[in-house]
Length: 382
Image (tube, rainbow, N blue to C red; front, side):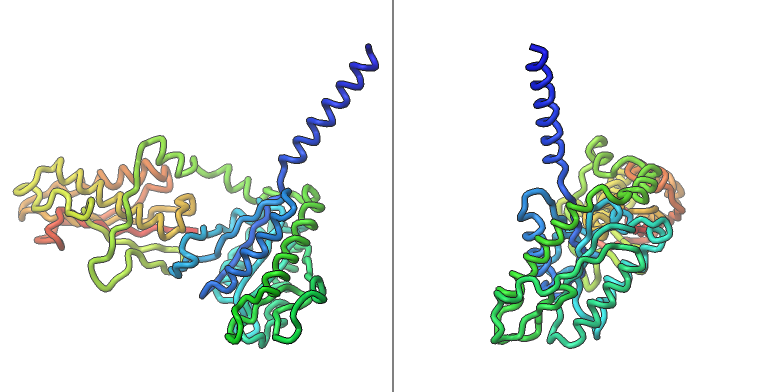
């Protein structure tokens, strides 16, 4: 009986450990910049290869916002999340024998992670959309140089799959990483063979990342940053029943927002469901309570545009820098600040300490659309 109990306990422990191991997937970031979608097509094949063994999960993210319809819904990565993965596959177009400007700018923001050895020992691989192919080896090498400074383990592609590709047409195979010769239009790009090589690269990379899982200190930079953060913004919105409206369409030749460096500039007024909410002058046509309601609606529009600017992740907002409220009021009206509190309170409700901002309020003779309020906002983002 004792032997049976010992055997049963050992079997149960083995099954439990096997179950835990099976549940612990290797998480791999496929980080890209893509202009016309060529790099993204390669990224999908890399991700397909990564997930082919069933034990790895690929997350395709881009380094910056892109209005290309093919790329619009891809989430934007933050620098702080890099150290949370088990491996990273980097993809970029070739720019004159180098990586793209956007990818270079993103990597240049990783100084804090580098100084804390945050990516040391993590596996990395690279792939590119190479145009005519000119300068692709130089570009791949420049990628490798940047990642080597971080102490990442660089996984090459070698000649994997070479014997199975069509050699009668130009292909994007290189030993440093798969490329696609996107500007050669005599055949669809990426070619079936370029897709095949990219999938093989992803499959091999997942194997290496899985083997190295747990051998480096993942999360040590990210966790320190997250510990200082307030609650997840999506959770805050849900708990406080704050629903962001659709992004209002511009009424003229301008953009809903402009980003300059890490600052985002947004102007909005009290548009709700396609109509101006509570239009008219405060103190004559509408009450102060109606003006406050319109002010909150205007701030919700700003948050909706901001959400678009950060790729759908409001956790990337570092600070609400300034709000300026402009109110459509009668000549002698003087309670602009009280009206503006509706916007300031909402910013603080959503972002906590990060929502506390500098502020200005003023009155105007008129506002476009006869809106009772217009708000100008400046935010700092990652």
